Image (cartoon, rainbow, N blue to C red):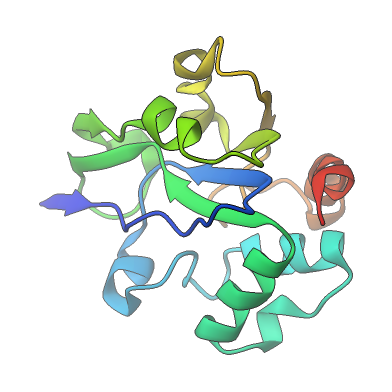
Length: 160
């Protein structure tokens, strides 16, 4: 089945752009970034920010995230994938990451949520921003929350 990413959630004050690979089935069904109940994205970002993002409604999460200077998007614009595993992504077409980055005057960091997304890091060479590949927030990546959080804490220094 052919699947497509969501529109970027950014504004001119975005200082951190977090890029996933491609939304999973739960996210696509809900039309929300990181909607799978076991995905740790909102818990990780909230812990780093000192805010209970996971307890908020989705619109409130996005508003709170953007108030921190954080934006979201995906490296894959569309692809064929059965299920939600990154390893099953086929025939991918990339999103124009460098073009988006060029429109974000306050951007300081692009953080990739997982190794699959992180493979796109070289496309940002020469864009003048820091790049970081984080452990995936996905439940398929079984690293303990505390270990993931240690890596994700690096985002704090870029937050508003």
